[in-house]
Length: 249
Image 1: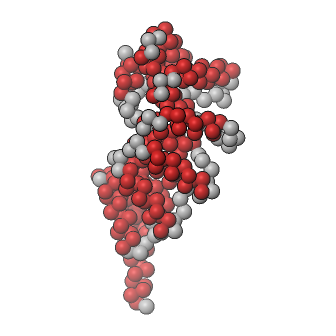
Image 2: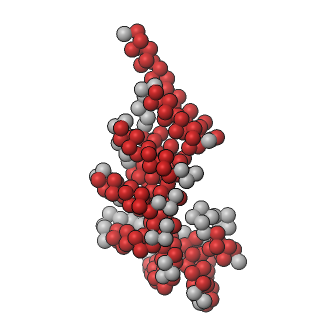
Image 3: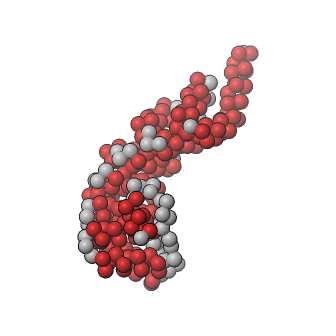
């Protein structure tokens, strides 16, 4: 009994320390140290929280350690921890950064099987994963599929991801058509319309430039100026150095 009480006390200490320990770990060596925290907790018989799993998955994804990120999904199930929307979004991001489009599809399937509705962050991450792996047809099929779902509310990042897929597939006319439609909606209902992220404009402008249509390039950047938004010239999170450089010029 005494040993049981001692073990219980140690577990409580771990529960109290885990958030602090994770914060320290992520500050220095995000994915390796975060994984170490999970292992220590397992050795202590303490069940990690879903927030802890999500943060660790995200830390792995940040350094493109997608294999480790995906391995944590069966691990959390083994611990009988219930995944949430943030779990699947983090897994989708990890797949995107690793250009693992097939794994991104599996993440979407797992989310559907879990009974959770496909949310915007997870879908956006999956579209990016498809696009970065040059599976632009799959990316746009997913985007189009969700247009008919009444609970689906795409945000600025959703449209930017779709534009990325179109431009990768050299379908710049489609991307331009979508941009025109969004800008028209903004003029009609400025309070309700969604405008793509500035990098989305840059992607379309670069595609028009590569297609040899300079007049459209200027038109796209005039449209961007009308939104009072600016492109961060240091933004290359999706490998869009060319689009950002074009915008900077």
